[in-house]
Length: 293
Length: 296
Image (cartoon, rainbow over all chains, first blue to last red; front, side):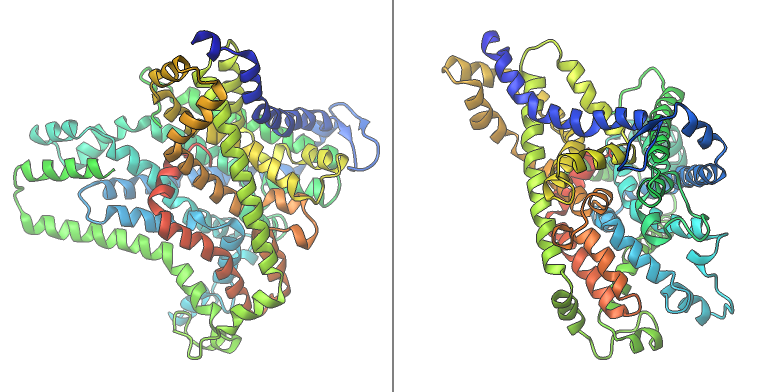
């Protein structure tokens, strides 16, 4: 038994295809991104080693910090929206008939491609023919907002479809976790005279804290590297008002061919994602920290 | 899920009656209205999309947004299907998605088997490398991958996309498979080896078929990710004949910036396969997304 199951040749054969793909297409690229970040390079010609010059430029690049601030705002919005999802899940996990159907309906937008969602919401926000402004004018709003063309609200306008897209996903996770809370605990609390509010806040919430931590990491890190909807809907505009770190990196590399500087931004994004993940885990760690799933 | 539901119903019947049934009914009604309102918000934009996909521009501009089209323009669909390369994009999406799903599930199963069932020293380290892969942002790999595919002449080639999808979906797939593999009883392997079965035979004939349910779950979740993926195709593929539906419609819609019916029809065509799959497979999709929730 032991001999058969520790056959080195078989192990290598089974590990190799996946391992090679992982190393060549994921790990080597992140190391190279770190290296390219230290060079000046237009993507085609020679790479010129310039040390930390890209990073000094990054530190004083107002446009980069503006996009980083937008990414940070998205992360804050996402974090706040988790509270809403949690409330909906709590309601849904109570004695609701058709809870299964509800959570499936909520999930539908999550299955659509970002391009389809972006294109659809661009029509919804269309200043004259979009369903939103048609509705606003019909109830007597004279000058409805221009939404995606207004530098003051574009970021909020983009955040709405992001919520729309991910709501079902987070509700699904919370709902599954809440359904795993042992019923005996809830019943015992009821017998002791606990109100539904107390049961939710004092019993269910602490019991699903592991899952909540996972969703906090997902929401924050997901927002920091967010790209798709913004790229399609506004391309970071108008005037950089919706530029985020990933779209800024993409532009630097594939529009203006600053591959070296783009790599520095990409590497910053990588380090930031890993550090933030680690920080959140650290900040929310308790002794009985075992995430189910 | 159903079991928990049943348990709860039983508990419900046992619990003591509450003081004010009328008040409870009203409270419950409010909760339902709230849940239905959320459901409407989630579906309404898609309903509106369906309506304007069947309208002419006059109808889009003059009728109320949620009015039914007076003269449904089904030819919008025929027009975008024949004029654009939608058929080609569609085929590319199916081909790339299917190839990547098969590779990912096969490679991930082999790795998971080797990590959980076979005995070797570095298995924890290899598993760790795959799990850290979950946290790496795609954008941090984009420039080196672009350069790499350029150098090995895979730029603008479907293989670049298939391999990239496989590499980036391996971690999440392995993570979902792990839990299932850990629960497989050792006796199966012992019995197989007693009978003189080779490891390959054991894996392909016994273990892999046993994991069919979880393989189905991972296949579905991979399908959704690959079908909707945007950045890689947008960066690595430039010719029209290799574009997938997601990137193809993005370029195609650009030409129709003022023809609402055509845009609506294109979007409807691109989301219909996913909607149909969802109606048929909703339980597995829900399960797949729940178990794959680590990937955002």
